[in-house]
Each structure stands twice: as C-alpha cells, then as structure tokens.
Length: 65
Length: 252
Image (cartoon, rainbow over all chains, first blue to last red; front, side, top):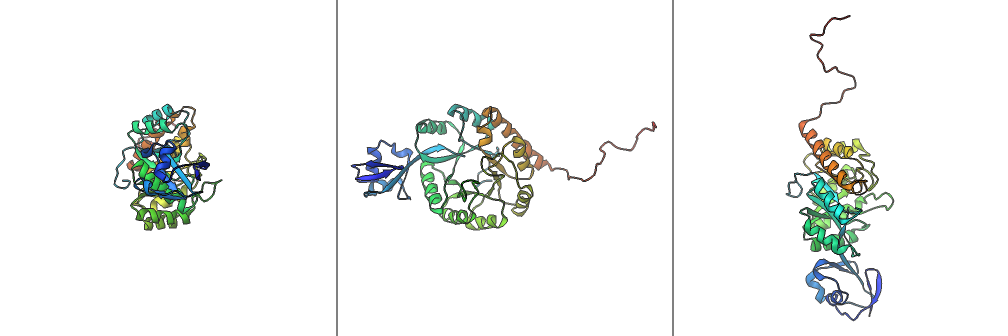
C-alpha cells in the first residue's frame, strides 16, 4: 500500500498507525500523529486503520518562537 | 497570573534560530525566562538533541501553532502539542498573511473557542484590536498577546497608542506583547506601559552574542516592570526646573 508520510510517498506493509510508527522507526512516546488532518491520540493509534493514499503526519518537539 | 501560574520572570523566550543547542540553553539560563516556546515539526536531524535540551531546561513549555493558516490546522496542531508536550498551554497563532504574519482574527477567535471548550489554556497571538480582544475573552481566553510589530521585524512597539488603549481597556487581563521586539529598550517600554510580559525570539537568537542579549532582555524587562510598579511621572509639555528656586543666590 502506498501512503503519504510527512509529505513523502512511501510503500508500507503496516495496517494500522501504530504498526506504521514501528515500521518506520519512530519513537512512539516522542511523537504526535495526525491522519488526513485529524489528530489521532496515542491510545487510538493501534485501532486506526490505514487506507491507500492516506496522509499521515508524525510530528516531534522542535524549536519554535 | 497566567492561567493560575505566577511567574517571577516576565520574559517568555522563543527557542528557534539559535546558532547551536548549547547557545540556546545558555541563553535561556542567562535570560532568567521561566517560559519557553516550542513547536511541532516533522522531525529533522536535530530532533533528539532538542528533546534532550527540553529535558534539561526547567522551564514551563508554551507550544505554538506557528505556520497554521486555518482553524483546522491550528486546532489539530494544538491537540497534537498537548499530547506530546504534556501541557494544556497553547500559543495560538492563526496566520492570515504569509508576508506580514498578521493574525487572521476571524479564524483566531473560532479556533480559540474550540480549544477553550476542550480545556486548553489559550494564549492567542492577536493584534491590538479591542473588539477582537473582547471576542477572544468571550471565547474563553484569559490572556491576550497583541503583537508589537510583525514577527521577526524588530520594529518594537509600532502602535504605541493602540497598545496603551488595550492596556487601559483590559485592566485585569494578563497582556503579553508578542512579536516584533528588536531591542531591550523596546521590551522595557512594553513593561513600563503596564504589560504583564514580553514574548520574543529573533532579537535574542540573531544577536551577535545571543547569551549576552538574553541577559540584557531579562534585565530590561525586570527594570521596565519595576518602573511601572513604582509609577512613572506624568509627561509635561514644558520644562520644570528640579532644583528649588528658594534660596537661590543673587549673583547678577
């Protein structure tokens, strides 16, 4: 399945958002996630199924003003 | 008081654009700031180092929604920030125009209403417009953050009369001048007007010596606040000699 992860098109075997984070090597507690523009809270990641073409954002704490 | 939190330092410091994480850390220390702003981004190479730095700093975090142009983007970003930073504080920015970085007041009020209802402590980045301020308070905000000048411009308090009116109009609301401050004197001026805090980033981060500038801002803000508390003398149109005339010798 092809999805959009942080603006890049990738091929993934992951079926859920939680699987995707593991597959892509994210440190799960350190990131926040959104799917198609909606926030997905940490407890809901394993129940969030990914569809072809879905847009996933995985964001981290960064510098800001 | 900012959402029930009393701050001894009235400087809120941004964490972006410093030459290195070490300089940032030293600048935070030197400034005496108890609140630092942070953001959420796709993780780059320096992400791990920044997390380590946040863990070292004893500051309260104020995550922002920088770069958001719509209610939806800002609300989603705020929700993500609350989870990852573990705070309900959010510096709400909904930018109306990329060139001016001017807030979109309509979207700002709408986003503030959504977030306040969800229990966020919203710090809205707004203009000095009094009606927008009132709408933000109605939406549930308990702090207002008018701009001094466009973000990163270093122009200082561009609408002094407007900011003065805002201070007079919202007597009991904590007001923070956010953005546009370029020099310590400008931050002191905001405090002398009776503002409760100043939020800045670029003026420190882009100084030749960010640590020295952070210290200078910390002191200027403290001086300005003490000056306000002590009560400034009223301005006069004409001179008024300070040395008494009584007892003046006749030497002519």
